[in-house]
Image (tube, rainbow over all chains, first blue to last red; front, side, top):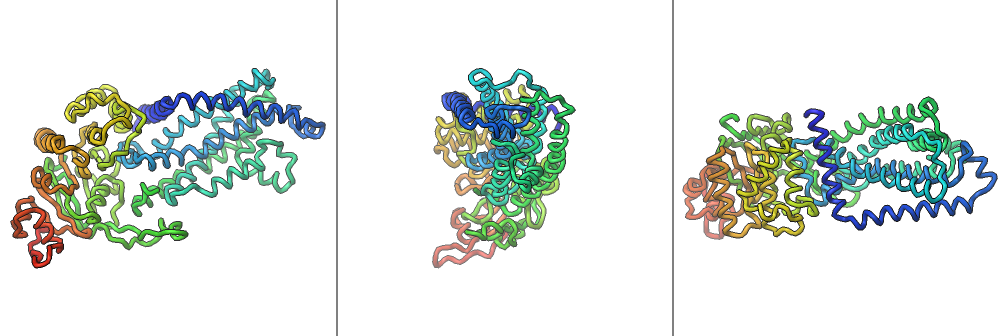
Length: 273
Length: 275
C-alpha cells in the first residue's frame, strides 16, 4: 500500500466520522457552549483559591486560572489519545461493521488510526475553544505564547499516549471489556501529572511517580510553551522524555495488538462483545 | 486466476469452550476443544457455484469466515484464487467479496452512497472506479432510487441489497455469501438468484460460495453442494446427484438421510460422496 493510498483511506475514515457527527449538529454546538461553563467555573474557582502560598508554588509566576486551564484542557486531549482507539473498535463491534471492515484491503491498524483522527481533531477544536473563551472573556495570558512549540509538544504527546491507547485496544480485543490498567494510568496521571496543581507540592515519593507518567512532561512542556513562551531549546527536556515514551510504547503496543488480533482469529471471538 | 478458485484440504477448526464469570478472563488462552470443522476437503473450479448446506451449527459460517480470513484454521489449508488464507490474507482479501447477511453492518446515519464510497476507498478503488462501480452495481440490484437516503430509513430488503452491493463493488473473483436472499421478498430473491447465476457467474466468471437454508435456492443455482454435519463434509456433488445417491425424492429428504436426522422408520443412506 502506497503512502498516497494510506492517506486517502485515512481521509475517508475521517470523512465518515465527520459525516456521522454532522448528522447530530445540535449536540455539536451545545458541546462547544458547554466548554464556556467549564472555563467560567475555573475562573471563579481561581479567584476563590488565590493565596500567597499558591502563588509561590506556581511556576513562572502564572495565575492559577491560566495554570489550571492549560492542565484541564490538555489532560482531556491526552485522555482522548488513550480512549479513541478502543472506542473505535467497540463502536465497530456494536454497529456490526467490524467484519465488513476486516475483509477490506485495509489493515485494522490503519482503520483504527483513521478512526482516531476525528476525535483528535474534535478535541483540538474543543481545546482551542477552551483557550479562546479564556483569552477573550477571562484574561488568559496568551500574549507571549510559543504556539508552534505548543503544537510540537501536543503532537509528540499524542504519539506517547497513542502507544498506551493501542495497548488498551489489544486488551479490549482479547477480553472484550475496558482495560483496568487504562483507568489506573489515567487516574494516576490525574493525581500526580500536575493537571490541577504543580507536581512540586506533592510528597517526594509521588513526585518520583510523576516522572514515570508521560502526562507530567506533556503538561510541563505545554505550560512552558503557552504561559512561559519557552523556545524549543527549553522545551527539549519535555520533548525528549515524551519521545522516549513513544519509542518504547508504540512498537510494543503494535506487537501486542498484532498478537491479540491473531489470537481472536484463532479463538473466534473477534466480533464478540 | 488458477482453474481451481478454492482448495480446501483437511481443514480443521476448533474453538475454546464458552466461559462465563471470572473464567471468561482466561478464555483467550484456554485450549481449543470445541470442534467446528473436522477434516473438510474439497475444490471449487473458477466460475462454479458452491452451496454450503447444513443445520445450524454445522460449520457453514465458520467455513465461510476461514475463507474470508476472519478465522485462522486450527489445522489444514485453504487457498482462495491460489493464495493461502493464513499466510497471504491480504492477497486473499483483494480477491474476495464477503457478505454476512447481517442487516446492521452499516453506518446508519450515512446514506447508502456514502457507505459504499467509504468501503470502496478501503478496497483501493479510485474516485472514478468508485462512481462507475456504484452506478453499475446499484442499478443491477435496483438500489439507485434509495441510494441517497440515510441507511436507517431504508427497508430491511434494501439494506440487504446494499450489503450485496458492497461485496460486489471491487469486482471480486470469489464471492462469499452467507444466506444471500435472506430478508428479500420472493420476487426480488428470484431476480437476485438470476443475477448471481447469469450475470455474475456465467458472464463475469465469478466463483460463488454461499451458505443457505433455502433448499429451492440450492437446487436452482448450485452447481454443487457441500452438506456439512457437525463440522464434517457428508456429501459433495451436484444437488440432483446428492438426491440420487441418497435415494431420496427431495433435497430435504436427502439431507435427513445423510445427516442421520431421518424421521422414524427411515434409514440413513450409506451413500457418501466425499472428496
